[in-house]
Length: 136
Image (cartoon, rainbow, N blue to C red; front, side, top):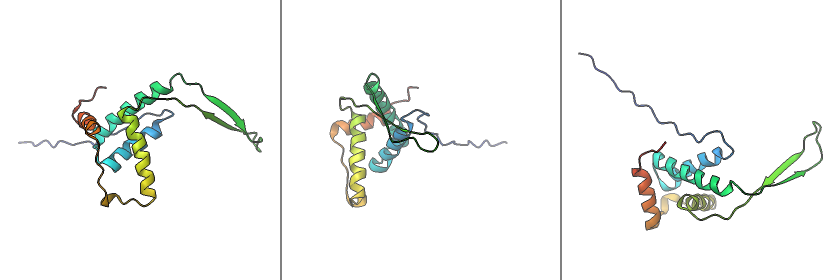
């Protein structure tokens, strides 16, 4: 009689190599750290945020400025900026909330002494992300 042992592989979560991949990865981590949302649900919320953010920034004008004097190697500093008014979707609102909570933690808020309670609508959205099958 042979016994097969199933090896469970941990799922890798990746948000690509794009310009905003690092921000997406940080948001994914913050959702878990601040709200105790599962990695899978956090991934779905982060993917929604990426779609919302990408759609909002898609056709925005970008201003570019060149600053400073050329260095020894002839390098200059380029700065770019863009902004857009967006509808506060759940993922965009949650990213803003993560930023507020992270700042509060740096100013002395003790997470083990506080309980975060999501609104009914936001809690429903997070629950749907836990139940929703992946659509890749």
